[in-house]
Length: 616
Image: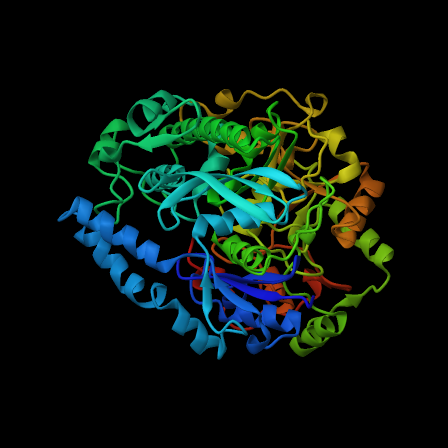
C-alpha cells in the first residue's frame, strides 16, 4: 500500500501553523509566526506551508489530502446563534466578527486552493472539528495504545471542553461542554482583568500565582463558575462581557474584586497576585476532576491532553501525581498551532484508515517536537561572512560543548541555535537562551537585560534525564517542559515568601532571594517547570549539559526561549544574530560556529527591539 501524505492547516484565529504527516510519521510542522516574525500570527500560513512542502519534497498536487483544523460553518452557526440569543446586545461582538467569519473563515476552501494552486489528489478541502483535531494531536503521537482524552481551550466551533477515548487509530469523543461555558475563557477573563493580554498573558498569570494567596478562590467558586463533582461546569455569565462586547468582563465582575481592572504595564498589586493564586487553585480542581471523569468513562489509566489549557504546567504536574493515572502525555503544541498537526493525523488515520504503529508506552512519536527548519554549517558560515561577523568554527562536538559549558560556568549568557526548530511555544534546546542556575542574580539579569520582560517571570531548568531525581521530586520523562515539580527539599534554603513581598507587594526582594542551590530556576513556591534532556532527543544540548556538569558538578541549566518580549522564538541564523546583538547575551552558538559579542561590529540599522515588536 503506497504511503499517503496529508497537509494540515490552522489559520485565522491565532497561532496559524502547518504540518505534514506521511502515514503515521510527522514529517514537518511549524508556526507561521516564526517566519513572519509577528507573534501569534493568525494569517494564512503560506510560509509554514512552503517549509513543510519543502521538507517533504512535495508539490501541492502531490498531496493526498489537505485538511483544515476547524469547521467554519459550525463556527458561523455559533456566532449567529449567540448573537440572536443576546440580541440586541450582541451587535458589537457580531459586527466585529462578521467580516472575518463571512470571508476568510467561511470561504476557506477557495482561499487554500488559490494559495496552493491545488487541493491535492482529493480535489477538495477536508475539514476537521476543532476539538477532534486537538484530540488527534494528543492521542496519535502519544506513547499509549489506548488512553482517555481531555481537551480544554477557549472555544472551538461550539465545544470548549471534550472528554474522549482513543484506541489504535480510532478516537471517540464521549462528552463535551459548549460555549459560552469555558475554563479557558474564565482564565482569559481574569488574565485581562489583571492587566495582561488575552491569548498571550495567561502564562504570566500562572507564573504570578505562587506570589499570591488563594483568598478569592471561594468567590470564584460562588460567583463565577459552578463546578460539579465530575468536573463539569457552568459559568455565571452575568459577570462576563464577552457575549455582548469586546470586553472579557463587566462592571459586576469589577465590583466582585474591589475595583476596576489593572492597567497594562502598571504596578502589580497584592490583588493581582491573590487573584492569580485563586484562579490557579480553581483551575487545578477542575482539570483534575475532568481528568478523573475522562479516565473513568474511557476505562483507561492513561490520559492525553491538548488545547490551550493543557499548557498549564502547574496543573499538569499535580495531575501526574494523582493515583488514578499510570501515564500522562500532553501535546507540546497544545494550542491552535497543534490543531494543524491533529488535522493531518486525522486525515491519515481516519480518512485514509492508515494503521497506527503499536506504541511501547514510553516513547512518543513527536520526535522531541523538533519538527521545524534546520540550517547547515555551510549556511551559517555563509550568513556570518555576509554580515562581516567574526566567528570561531569548532566542528568537533565534544570540544564545542566543552567551550560552551566553560562559558556558562563563568556566568556567560549563551544563545543556542542547533538542529531543527521546535514546534510549539517552548524552546527545548534548539532555539534557547542558556544560563547558570546556581547564580541568584541570573533570573533578574536574564529577565531585565536579555528578555526585557517582567521581573517576576520564572525560568525553567533543563536537566540531564539521568540526574532529574537528584534535583526535583520527579523521576519521569518531561522532554517538553510541560510539568512543574517541586525542587528536592535537600536543595532548598529557608525562605519566607510573604515576608519578602511585604505589605507593599514589592516582588523584587522575593525574586532576588536565594531559595535553593539552583536559585535561578527555583520559583518562590520551591517549584520548577522541568525539561529533561537525553541523548536521543537532542544530543547537542545533552552534550552541553554534560560539559557544564563536568566543570561545575551541576547537571542543570537555565533554559528560556530565544527571543525578547513580544518577539516570536527565533527561526533562522539571521533572527538569532539580530536578537543576540540587541541584548546582553555574551555568546551565540550557531550550529558549529561560536560568535562572541565582544568581537562583533555594531549592528547596522535599528537596534531597538521596542520599535520592532508589540509588547505581549
